[in-house]
Image 1 (cartoon, rainbow, N blue to C red):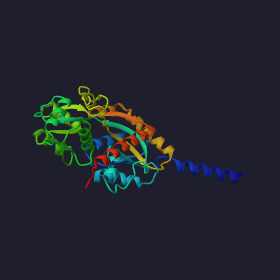
Image 2: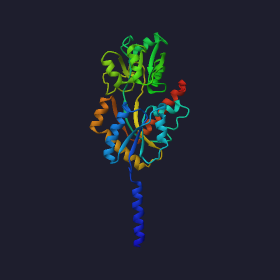
Image 3: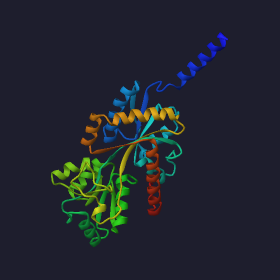
Image 4: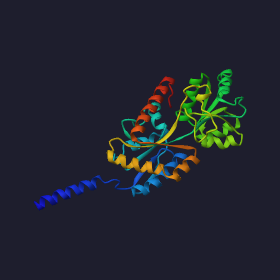
Length: 317
């Protein structure tokens, strides 16, 4: 009996040990290069999560192919919670744009937390004779095909929100794609393009200096980051609503207890005063959805953009 009892105890102890989490360093995979806003947020989170999980949390940058390289890499990772994807809006958009993205955003992942949103704005060159969105739409309608807008690349959020704006406002604008915001903004400032959708954090300093004019935010509700700007929807383009988001996901079939442990650590980190202050300073608004609510939001967001991309026949060569 003693031998049997000892055997049961040893098995139970081994089983508990096998289920312990985390057992080794955790990696957050970022689909962008080092130094950007997303990379900065990921590193800030890693620092705070590390203290709570008592294991090193490492940030690994895997940029390229419209963020699909990083997403496909995490989709193939072992579903044990030790590999996390730092995703942005492009995560759900890319599979509709690329023939072989290497992952299914709904089947291959388990949502962890919708972290924050980055306030986006419609910015125009000061020479544009429009002080608000209504005036801009009227001006664009009088100049069909003569208005050029910058995007940070084909298939990016800035491209798609501009195309959605075109459709909903009933105007014609021509896309001029660039490789990133840093390349596009100088041409907007110089007047080589007349308009651009971009993050408020990068456009605001230029607006302060009078080099661009900001007409409105893309979200349905006013932004706490830019409370002085009205929404585009409130200025005549009814129901216009685009939220650029950042969130964390793990591979599908990750155990529920692991998902919950990570979700708790992330939410505690996002409630840290230093984290919130840093996010606000960079133009982010904290959201903090739990896995269930994030999953629901993700399905809606993917459905919206999939339908729009197919309708507009937008493709990435």
